[in-house]
Image (cartoon, rainbow, N blue to C red; front, side, top):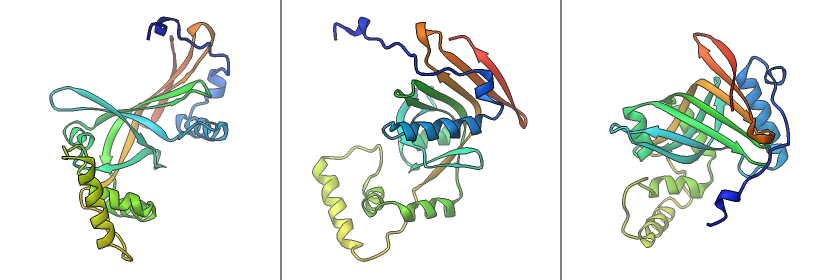
Length: 212
């Protein structure tokens, strides 16, 4: 840990200009996401999700982007989890994608709402069977007595649903985050990073450049 003060990387990979940023942040997001996949970024759809509870305590964790539907960012979870409880109390959230190979990150602020149940069911139906059973096994964020407790419950449910279609739990489903701000960050030499911010004003996006 003694070398932390000397750990640094010089970012030289690319630049982000107003010309390359364009005027549509969702189009730029799609382009950067495609480039991250082509580059071989591990789990390019992994994103940090920040929420705030009723006491004002922020919390952050990694979730997976599972859709960009109607220009909104979609993910799935247990509605009774800590993140679900936070969103029920305060649906202002933040997302962050970090792609180190590309020396890029994208910061997003927006409003999270539950998606229609039929959309959640369509996604649940294509999940791996183990993940479907896992959704029923886990009372997410609650205390469990042991790892063995979870494995025994998983085994019991696997046997119960053997050869059968697994229904989506009532407490499980998707959220859609409607962005109000999207910032694109490109690492540059000397920490003079490029930061282009798009802010939603009514039905238009306003673009500005931020100091690094």
